[in-house]
Length: 110
Image 1 (cartoon, rainbow, N blue to C red):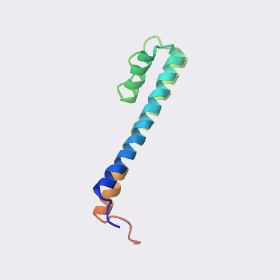
Image 2: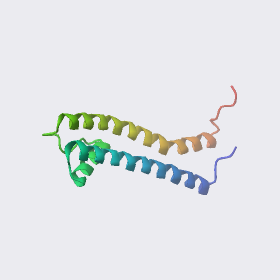
Image 3: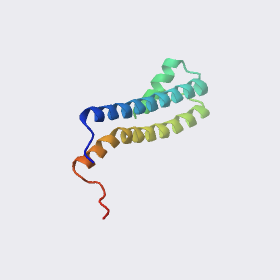
Image 4: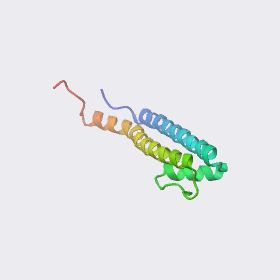
């Protein structure tokens, strides 16, 4: 099969981008809710801490966290790392698939 037309490929990339953005937004909301619940942070402080962890920079506030807050921050950091890998896969899948079609790398039954 020939590769998709550019317009269809752009539409596919937009769908993948929208899904990745929704996953990031959902993950950020989880982080904000956790920081608000365990550390009684304002939504702005919870946002900056969750966003910094999602971005790989680490939390802004590490001093004075409760034990439950520390456990949440650690688990959320692990989750955020997995989300990063998943988002990269979501965004790269259509590109790699298109390259496979362009260069005829698909399996030929060998």
